[in-house]
Length: 328
Ligand code: GDP
Ligand code: CA
Image (tube, rainbow, N blue to C red; front, side):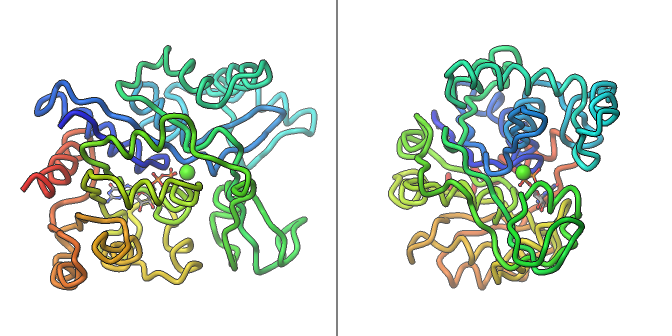
């Protein structure tokens, strides 16, 4: 096992990958990990390019994460955003902490100087030393929007609203009729992404949101095909335990695309590679052991193991099970 490639969103992807690195340190110390990160949540705020999932992964793996929130920096303060708010130019619903702002300022400076997002990410990672190669899914902006089904504040039913605004400001409580990836038509996979999938020894789908994290990465032209054609086994971990999303609001996302919120529903949504889907293996929680026969019938090798990521060792144990599932 030399090359491990992970497709990650924010908190779920970051915590899983941190466990994976811990596990590999013991079992496969020479393994290289590449994390292809969702950039569909990226947005401009106060003239700064904010990349929520890239930063969550970078801070988590680099030891700077606020453990309690799961995102943002430890020891954060808000003096700058309070000043911005005093000018009437703030975002009350989106936290821009002082320490975190430094990251966005440096990134934006690099982008304005002509760097690609891949180059800016590599530069930021020189400081954080995440222990894995972090690649944005694309260097072109692709921003997930939701089409809302009801009026909310200044928005009218039928409007497109940025996913982060719907998720963070409205806590996903406004009905949505569809997800739209703005910019997808002009996007290509970032340098190294298709190679990392094609040359991997194993590809892992962490328990990230299947719609707006993994789903968005898969929508970038070429990425789904690379997964289908790689010689590496593809193993996923269910983000749904006992019929509900462990943290966050994946339920609303799954309902919108017509997928049942269950470990089985998400597994079948990704589908078996044998029948044109993506998965060779799928881990479900012990609480969902009843779904194993249906998954086997669909041609997906599965196991039921504890899937709660309470800490690094429990996330490492999940990564070990994911690797074992295809090594068997
Ligand atoms: P986000 O971009 O910060 O929303 O993070 P991700 O998309 O990477 O992951 C979010 C998903 O992780 C949520 O929808 C949860 O279902 C899932 N999740 C969070 N914590 C856990 C956990 O401890 N175990 C499992 N199995 N899933 C989790
Ligand atoms: Ca996210």
